[in-house]
Each structure stands twice: as structure tokens, then as C-alpha cells.
Image 1 (cartoon, rainbow, N blue to C red):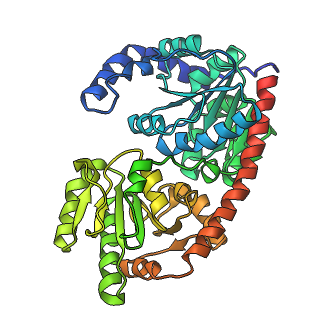
Image 2 (tube, rainbow, N blue to C red):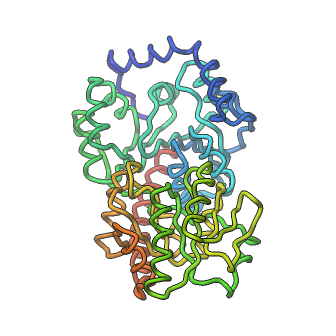
Image 3 (cartoon, one colour):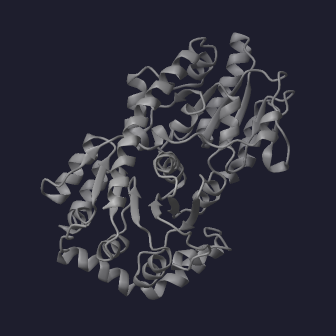
Amino acid sequence: MTNKPSIGPMLRLVLGVGAVLSPLAQPLLKRRLAKGKEDPARWREKLGEPTAARPNGPLIWMHGVGVGEVMALRGLIIALSTKRPDLNFLVTSSARSSGEVFEKNLPPRTQHQYLPLDMPGPVSRFLNHWKPDLAVWSDQEVWPRLAVTCARRGIPQAYVAARITDKSAAAKSRFGDAYGDLYRLLDARHAQEDRTASALRDLMGDETDVQITGSLKAAAAPLVCDANLLASFDADFSPVWVVASAHLIDIKLALDAQILAREKHGFTSFLIIAPRILTDTQPIENMCEDRGLTWTKRSAKQLPDPACDTFIADSFGELGTWYRVASLAQIGGTFDATEGHNPWEAVALNCAILHGPRVQNFAMDYAILTDADAARLVKTAEDIAEALLDTTLPQMSDRAMQVRTTAAQGLSRIADDLLGLLRA
């Protein structure tokens, strides 16, 4: 291992603030628990108290904040496992939903825990128990105390699929040298695109190496499928499409498009609605009823019914099934301030992609797909209805899969780099 650079006063100040706030950790988590924001059986993992044993053999710890980030790590895990079958993996995340979804999609030799709070006690307990041989940060998160403590313990670290927006870069620069010191602690840095690579170099203020290897999400492993649920779809269904990770505005437009396609163009389809927020079920039912549409819903233990117009898939962890039965996916969050959700999970399961105009969260991803004529921008319900009739959708899906294949090459480069660190 090379000698780690010293950290400056601003980063030391950040660490000091975390230490001062330590007494608030447990009360804060208990308040979140009371609000349903923490897992009652596992909330103490955030205090660094493990609920699983460390496996024997080399262990790579990876972190992603939310559902999309941890699900994207599965492709990297599979790539590493193919090259080194002896490896074990620990994936951490912060959001409760991320843990629930990832548990249903665990790759082999992989465990999930919630990330400990970035305070002295939780960090020490976590690292003392898991003793990772390599730490991997992804997307937007590198936590200061965890990163500094790993560096001091000689644990190699990498930052992969790094993504820093202009707003985030400006905010980080206000902390002086703190983030530059933090990123220099790491042994490898892989950015999704040029803008992030430039931001990392500016924050570090030197020629520290930053590679550009793309998004992990584009090459992520396909979501798993419920075989019994998949078998409930048969030849009686009209063409199936899905609006996924959907917010209410996405759902309104999709329902209006379904009616337009039928009444104006004579095209009948079956729509699966996979809401981003499960408590939106009642408003969705109201929208269906207002339009004279019939439905069944997953939360009532019902199956999709070909005699109905739509199915409300108000459940976590089953998108893999919905994407497999659909030929077209309208990606949610692209018509409001959400600014878009991940299109790659649908691409991986051969869905043609529709999206609205607001995609800032995945601007690079949608730009790549658009440049390859592998996704379609829609702005109105009429646009969506016309897309339902488009006979060239399979070709658009094929082009998206070609983009995904190219992304896998970047993933392979990351995997090789990580294995090099593991041997160091």
C-alpha cells in the first residue's frame, strides 16, 4: 500500500463535528423508527451493530445510498465473482426501501447491512466486525469518517460510477480542501462522465488519476423474477406495457394515453402501474375510476386480470416480473420535479423506453440512449398513445441493448482495477 496523504484542518473539522453529534445518534434513529423510516428488526445496524456474521475469506464491502445505486452494484459483483469465485461481498445502503428490495435480488455470496452512521462508535464497531479487504464507494456518496478510518487501517478504497452534479460540486467547494483531501485518500476513482471527472480533479487540485468508465446502472444485472407471478400472464392478455417507478403525474398521462389509444386509434392494451410511492394506491384507484377503467391490485393479493384495463403493482421488489411481460416501459419521474428514474432496469429486460422531458437525475443516461435512437421522448398523453402503436419499438429496444453491451466494457475495466487493489 502507498502512504496515505495527510488530511487538512477542514476535513479534521468535519470529523470533529461528527464526534460532537454522536450522543444524538440513537435518539435520532428511534425517532425515525417511530415514523416507519427504519427497519424495526435492523435499525441498530446503523449503530454499527451487525445482524450477520462475517464470512470466511476475502470480503469486498460496497456502498450505495438508495435502491438504484445498490441494485446497480449487482452487475459489478457478478463481474468480480466471475474473475474471483472466492470473493464475498457486503453491500450497505441507507434507505429502508433499498434494503428490502436488495434482499430480494441478492447475488451469490452477498449480504446486506445498513450503513452505520458516520460517527466514531458506529464506524469502529462496523469495521471491527466486518474487516473488509476492500471498500468501494459508488455514485454520490463517500462518508468522511468511514473513508478516513479505512485509510488509517490500510483498507484500500475505490470510488466507482462517481457522479457529481454542478450544484453538488459548488457545495463541496465551500468546504475548502475537505473534499479534495477525502478523494485523495482513495486508491482509485472512476467517474461516470467528463463533468464528474473534471469536478473531482478541480476539488483535488492536482493530477490525481480519474478514469471515465460510465454508469454501473447501464450494465447492471437484470432484476429477478417471480416465476409464479410471471406464469399468471398468458395469451389472453392484450399487449402489455408498464409505467414504472411512477409518480401521480406519470400515471395520469399513462391512463389518458391508454384511453386515447383505444378510443382514437382502436388499439387495446393492458397497463401495469408500478408506483414509486406505495401509499399512492388510493389516488391511482380514483384516477382509474374517474376514467371508467377497471383494475386489480397487488396489495389485495390479486393477480393481473386480462378482463381488466390495468393492474396496480403496489409492491416492492417485483419490477423484474413486470418488465419481463411488458414490451414498452414509460419511466416515471420524468414529468415533474423528481427529474427521472433509472431506465436501465427496463432496458436489461428488453423493454422499449419512453420518458418525459425532465431527466436531470439521469441526464447522461438518457442522452446516451437518445444518441443511439434507443429511447423516445414523449411530452403528452397523445405522444404516449402514438408510441403504443409504433411498430418499430422492437428495433429501438435492440439498439438500447447494444448500448448496454458497450457499458459492460466499462464495468469490466472497473472490475479489473478493483481486483488489482485487492491484491495490492
